[in-house]
Length: 150
Image 1 (cartoon, rainbow, N blue to C red):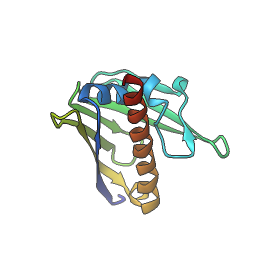
Image 2 (image 1 turned 30 degrees about the horizontal axis):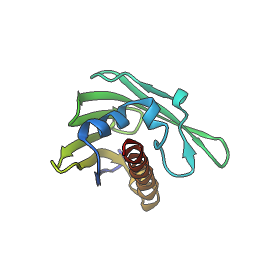
Image 3 (image 1 turned 120 degrees about the vertical axis):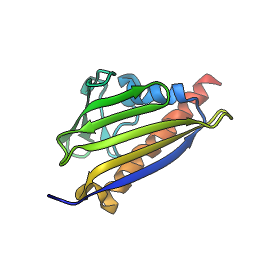
Image 4 (image 1 turned 90 degrees about the vertical axis):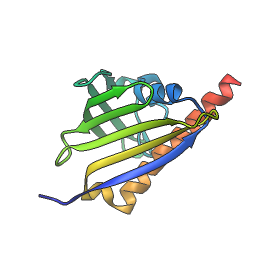
């Protein structure tokens, strides 16, 4: 049994919980930011069955060499717009990701991503930095959505 850990990431976005929840659960949105910098996730590589027991699957493609990485998960809890929980059974011990959307009531929403049963490989500084670039891409995408609405 490999030791697992947990990670928490927090970001504040200038958008409603509903908009952010929809960004995280709609292939047409996810394709713009899912995966670390240096990867793309074509909309045809994203499967979402948004219900408890439903499938959430993405296949990221490396910009450098075209290699792919598939993330397979099953939704555990879906409560729009405040909570999204999925488990990746393929990852040792079943890594669980909980995303909470907290309305700050000033036009901003705090998004807290909490992961448990995180394998050691995902806990490395390099892996965390890669995940952070995905969050950065989400920041940029939400800002672009805001610009389109203004």
